[in-house]
Image 1 (spheres, helix red, strand yellow):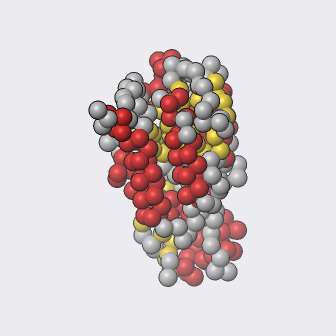
Image 2 (cartoon, rainbow, N blue to C red; image 1 turned 90 degrees about the horizontal axis):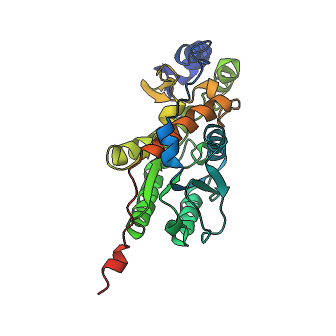
Image 3 (cartoon, rainbow, N blue to C red; image 1 turned 90 degrees about the vertical axis):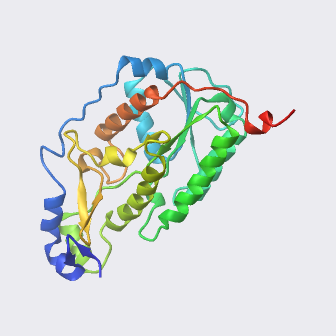
Length: 286
């Protein structure tokens, strides 16, 4: 039987409101202003790069934040992989279908292989929080992601591929969470964030310190002062989105957008200069 903070589910149902109030900080700490310091150097470097970002709705939230922080960056939606992109372009596309993460991988791959890779210096894609549920096989999904990105990296060595952890949601709390637990219904965010964290742990284990990794989940689960937003299941802590960063529990509000966009612009600006090389297949030819 699953337990929350070590209590069996049925007993936890009676204590859940207090439990969630303890592990999910409220008040001034949760609503502290997020610093959005983006260095001039990062903006300058970004203005010289061509970036492609595959995403769905949360990615759109992040781009709204980028528009506010870096107005000189041209944010352009692309549907034609043969489109010509100039320096300072942050090209993006709504890839695949929500709740079908494999379609996002396939669409991202198709766009880059179709010619977009020749037009960009940096490429990244992210899954959405809705792509994960309590029953998601995080290991299997990660293996599909890893194989897809490894193939893209081999075929397009001149592109810097950035890995992005899956976004989180808040965890339901208060009277509604208590009633759901009492009735044996799932509490919003609890099981889903467990699946997201399983996927994200594999991302960090595989890429952190080895290839560029933008840890979106860590940003969403950290308050401005560095305090982590967590909850416990069966004695283990799992991250959740800071409630102040979202108005609906999943999408980023203005505060969340500004926080993540500032980090992304700084991250992209700090990447090493790309080096354009011939694909391995071309090198093999006499």
